[in-house]
Image (cartoon, rainbow, N blue to C red; front, side, top):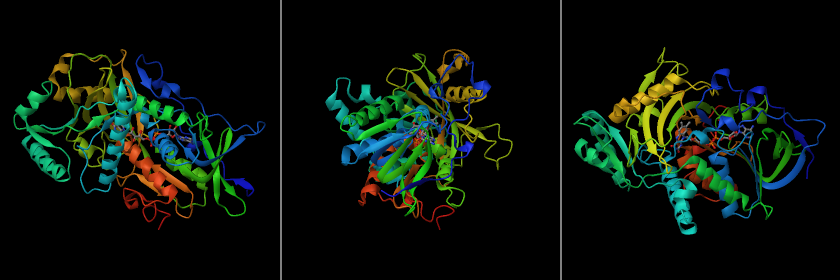
Length: 475
Ligand SMILES: Cc1cc2nc3c(=O)[nH]c(=O)nc-3n(C[C@H](O)[C@H](O)[C@H](O)COP(=O)(O)OP(=O)(O)OC[C@H]3O[C@@H](n4cnc5c(N)ncnc54)[C@H](O)[C@@H]3O)c2cc1C
């Protein structure tokens, strides 16, 4: 093996979790994710980091990184190490609502084939779990065959839904457009005007992010005794290890370990990928992957029996909400041009397997702030009340025992994930930028990364996701 050299140490900005702001402490409600956050350990010069050798090193143990590890372990003979700065679900994954839906997607778009494939892979995993365990996929994945309703409240929105139903049906998706009265029969708690309606996709599914992560961790760990899997949590990646002779990347230096990856290093660190890459590649690199954190709040009401839902529900405005042209409600926007000032809400509502009502969600650019914004929570609640009149009679005491989830979606300005090799580096890949679809797209992404590492053609065209010619420094 060649001698190695460390790339420059990361700047403080690369730290994945800034310390919690004072205002996010002391609330009585529980906040998923950040509770388990720990301070970044410093690299101590006195204790020599321990070195281990693997085929693939994955940086980031969110749903994307863990799924990549799982796919490699299941479908190749390769060994894998996963390192995370904190723990799984401390990133965006822990805030995810869990819908694996096709309703808000567009046939023929760059992400369509990936979404179709990924949903199939979730179906396969669920079927496997159903065959394996009592309780099946529902218990192990939070899997629910609820179907989804994309709701429009005006005649104009209904016309859009009719068109969307046609397009999805032509693409082979089981979709039906419902009038207001048919919708009421299917979902009595939901209220739309007489000229509104919904698109119903009976085959849409949902998972629970925490259960799914814990299942995938369990699968991955079953490869540890065979020496094929190692997981290092609370151990942030700091720099790349490069051969002094060839410059080839040989692995990753974390705060406590040196992880050699003979075949590949995969950076799957969500919204932190941009700053991490700057640290990895050093000041001379011109590569800039413009992924940035898009903060979201989610409200979870335990055993909330005021509202019975039969399906997963999303307002039509969400379709634009996930991009930039939001038709959902905007809050505190002082300037339409400055996305940093704008927060927007679109209604999503699901019941999970425990019977908790999960209400979403907000989108705003606030850096990595984890502060709970009560005005956003109130807007999520009020927005839900516009669709579900029953909850208008319920006073939401935000300081009472509610679970608030906050996460930073890895947002890409061009609206699609980045999955591919770093130009001029034959063995470093990036997998991030899934914004509000990382749970749904994780398994397809994992398969794609595996195919790339193996040099296989892949079931889904890689081209739309590649880095080459897409960002500055890659022309
Ligand atoms: C409110 C909300 C609702 C959502 N609902 C849905 C939904 O219903 N369906 C859906 O498909 N998607 C949903 N999403 C989006 C989804 O959660 C994300 O797209 C997905 O979790 C991204 O996964 P990830 O693994 O890329 O990132 P993350 O989960 O953020 O994981 C990145 C990991 O990298 C680690 N990391 C950072 N820096 C380093 C370092 N230096 N070294 C090592 N590790 C590092 C972090 O600790 C973190 O664990 C939602 C998101 C939000 C915020």
